[in-house]
Image 1 (cartoon, rainbow, N blue to C red):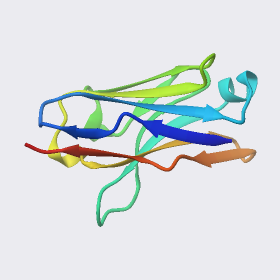
Image 2 (cartoon, helix red, strand yellow):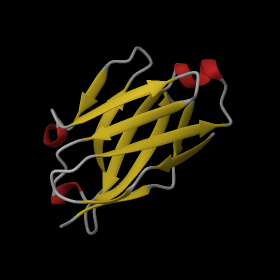
Image 3 (tube, rainbow, N blue to C red):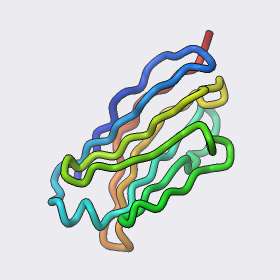
Image 4 (cartoon, helix red, strand yellow):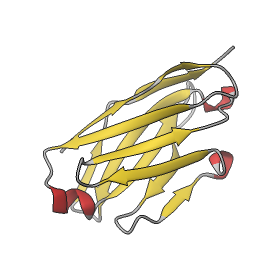
Length: 118
């Protein structure tokens, strides 16, 4: 399985950005049964969990992004999107996509840089 993130960039505080993660090397059933997460890692910090969408489309978010970020998935396209609103400088990080299904599968993308700065 390969994951490729896109959509990162530079945005001003208060702005919005949408990230997308595209999976390949996995079929529709395999993707739809997988849980998709977004993580981020800021310089000098550990990688932290940001958002999750399960196979049943239940969602979870870290407290710091609740109400600002949304996550969605398109199983037919094998993509998961992270919509980020009202961005803050504290959101600056490399954002990573993760696909996992129990102990069977665990894949990571290469990451996409998000920089929030005026």
